[in-house]
Length: 147
Image (cartoon, rainbow, N blue to C red):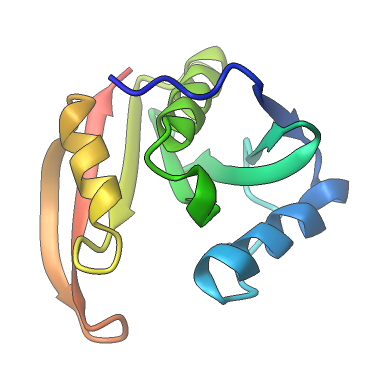
């Protein structure tokens, strides 16, 4: 199992620092929109840094009374395949547990982002739904697991 570099720091940040996540999102996905709304219940913003420099992020929120949803995340190219995404996912799961959720879910597009499919399967997630998304021209897979 990949372990993130020892100097990776993951912190929960408040909405005032959302522009840092937007900047990472722009670098990773060439897109300014991270999520539709910031007024979500139990919104969690996580930022991964190395030496004080942002290298990745994860955003999630309440989907239902029992399920926490990981809406989006990304890691800069030089930091991929080094355990940073896995550490961010684990930190978001921990936050969801702390908030009292019993289930964790996320969606991914396997042809656009195969790493999240591999990560989900490696971490014990189950595919609970699949369908074609015409807007993204890719299949959309829903991964879920109990916390």
